[in-house]
Structures are given as structure tokens and as C-alpha cells.
Length: 384
Image (tube, rainbow, N blue to C red; front, side, top):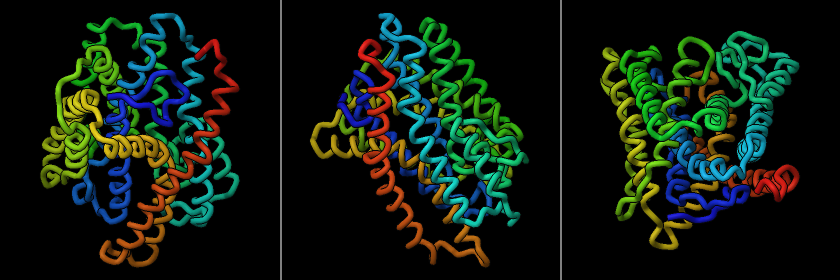
């Protein structure tokens, strides 16, 4: 059920290897989701249409793993707020920095232009980079919002989910961990009802839960609702979890995750309630069940164990570094007459494979060495 991976060296507990693998599966689907954004003309005709729901799956996984790794340390008083924050920063922030730098470099390679072709000053790019390094979101229309698309992090759009991940970790350390399980369940139920109402009421304006990436419109409240249900749900699962017997859990759950994320838009767009209902059911009902099943299973052969370890290792680097290269891909696709997928697929496939290779290299040559150094430097033996 559990196995030590390279992602665990800063913590004393092993991870659930199947959950690590499922995180990697979802991250790889996200790449394809973003690839096909370049060919979509509306949210309705996007291939891999529900890839945005991977974020909710990530939040549930994160809540489960954080609760499993740290709840008993708080009870034993062997963990302080300061050491917890250090641990989470060491785990998450080195890749945030790399993603920001890659975003700045690729934006400059792209010619430092907004989506409408407006030239952007280098000083604005440097300001955007500075804010990104400290995970400070850019206000829509402000100088550091250099792409003109209202993204919180215009140098590397998906960083928005890490902004909410940090909020979730702080809420856990300050508030959620103190809640009795019964109260936590009540909190999750209320948040789930709020998220379902947002989805069914078309809070995004597009009939889906793909919100949180901007400070414009309902993105901020929508992103908070996604976090406030999913992260505490994962924490609740870690408290009440009891394994069930399940064979082939990784392959079964992987198939379900892929199918859920690639389902076409439900309906024709004229009635967004149906797609909102699909999103709500996936997040509130199906994803928690998948996490439960994934935590219950175990790799019964060396090949599955190696696959889970590899997918778990690259899941976070893949997610963080892939989008700067998507910006370059979109610029190439949309320069002049839009290139159709039938002509662009070799480049798309090469981009997909290249991102995976680069993520592995970033993990081994940058992320792991930096985290080891930071762990030695800032986490003393007393805090381990």
C-alpha cells in the first residue's frame, strides 16, 4: 500500500504509492487538455474537455496526504507552525521558482507581446517575475499582468492552483487540524453544497468549474469554493479511512480518472446546468471514492510499483513547468492562419514527450538537490 519515493525524503512517513501514481496520471491528462486548448473555439468543443477537474482531484489528494503525514505530529506536539510552513515551502516552492523563471524566459522568446499583439516592456516582465516568485497574483489590467488575459500568474498560468494550495495548507495549520472529525465533516458538507450550487447555478458563466485562475469575475470565489471543499474532504478521508479489498486498484482508478477528465462537454452549451451537474458529481462524489480506492490498493507487482513511483515523481514538475511551453505552442499555432490538429499533431506529440523528459530532468537536477539542501539548512534534527 505504501512506498517511499523521492517525493518523501523531507518527511518521515512513506506515501501511498497508488495515490502518487494517480496524481501523475491526472497531471499527464492536464498536458493534453492544455494542448487541445490551442484547437478549441469554445468550452463546448474542447477535447479532453474536463481536464480542469484534475485540480479538484489534486486538492483532495493533497488534503489526504497532508492529514496523513502531519495530523499525528500535531497531536504529539512534535510539530510547530513554523516547522510545518518550512516543510511545505521546501516541498512546493522550488518548483514555483523554476516555473516562474521558465515563464519569463519563454515570454521573452515569444517576443514579449500580449495576446492582442501589444508590446510589453522588459521592466513589466521583471515585475511579473518578482511577483510570481513570491506567489503574489497580478491584478487584471495591471502592469505585471503581461499577457492581457487577466491571469493571476501570466508567466505560468497554472500556478494559480498553487496559490490556493498554499491557502489550504495555512487553513489546515491554523484551523482545520483543530476541528473534531464531526465538525470537519459538517464543514465539508457545507462547502460541498456551496460548490454544487456554484456549479449548478453556472457561477463561472460557462457551465463548468474551471475557475480560480484569475481575480476577475467569479474566479476568486469559485476557486475558494473548489479548495474549501476538496482540501478538507481529503483531510476528512485521511481521518476516517479504512481500507477496502480491491484488486487492480491503480489501473482501475487510472482508467476512471482518464475517462472522467476526457468526457466531452455535457450538453450543447444552451443549458449549462447539465455540465455543471457533471462537474459537481465528479468532485463531490466520485473523486473522494477514487482516493479511497487508491489508498486501499497496493501495487502487487514490481512493474506497477515502478510506474506509480515514476508517475508520482514527475507529477508535480510536469504540472508546474509545462505551461510556459504551451504559450509558445499557442503562439506558433495562431501565427497567421490557425494550424489544424491534422498538421500540428507531430509538434504536439513532441511537446508532450519533451515536457515529460524536462520534468524528469528538473526533478533530478534541480528540485531534489535544492530540497535536500533546504532540508539540511532549515529543518534541524529537532524538527524532523
